[in-house]
Length: 380
Length: 83
Figure (cartoon, rainbow over the protein chains, first blue to last red):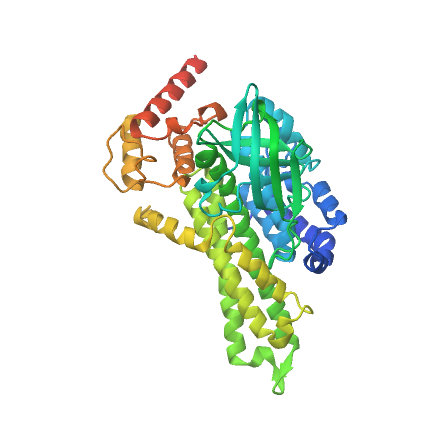
């Protein structure tokens, strides 16, 4: 594996860092405090090309390789996890269409999703179905050339602004996935407020009350909704969250290095206290290890190696856990300041806790990755 | 190695159980649903084929025999297209 970034990958990272610093970072605290993403940021994201950066060029996407896309995700995640989560969910749905869609579905949806003219949501979770996706209760009933969709989806990231949703439902006991337009009759969006982390990610409860969806909007085969469609989408989600979590760890490192270099206690700078130095070292190691696992995952994805699926789980699990540890350490290292809104580290901690739950909780990964370990992948 | 042997070999390395060729690995609970995505990546990588949207039925991926049929059909169609 070549650990040297190519010129285009370096340029992608630099451009994303500039964009994140200039267009997103000034809003990050506002986004967290007001629990919304302002139109200025949504517009910047739509126009940036980053929503479609990893999608195929023939549909208007950027065709970025996995490492470039990961680096872009990390840079945006470094300044604002809420905004990064927009990239995540949008791409989960868009990538599922790119892989599983019919030619007509790709032609209908991908140009708008690549250009950012439309934002996509991913509607799998329900009030009674979180990690156990097979417990979904939303129902789709066949009626001639349509499905009639009825049920409620919860925790839908950017559900408040998404223009199309990928919705999972049961039809005669078999899981199906449907693309549902926001302006469909019977679809109602209810904002969710007062979430601890990624507070600006415009979460919503989405109600489907006898929504009529053309059968032509079914993505993938009947019965493959949860096994293939949701897992292909979630695989992209985990890849994105892994890089976004790595961004949080790096943000913690940035914040801590700046703070210990400036703050004085006991007549000397914090950086001269041995236990403080230990904390900084721990975050540095976490940041480096998280990024290395993300690179490995991206490298395997680029090659189409089947191990990429589990190595992405591994990267996500490690990076999300590392983000919680790094942000906890960062808050402690900032003392009382770390518990205030004056410094961003308390936001990093709240955001990091979300990373350990979404796209497969830590506990799910602990079970899944043990199966992978038993396959002895490290012998390859 | 023939397709079936390569698929058997992959299953023996990944599923960690002795499996009959016709056994449905999902019904038997030998793997979780994430394994379906791994199988798609495996056949694309191992046999240099592309699983198109119309191929992505779980019935094509649920057993050694089903996956072998799927791969052999794709390879035969690919060869026919090349001719």
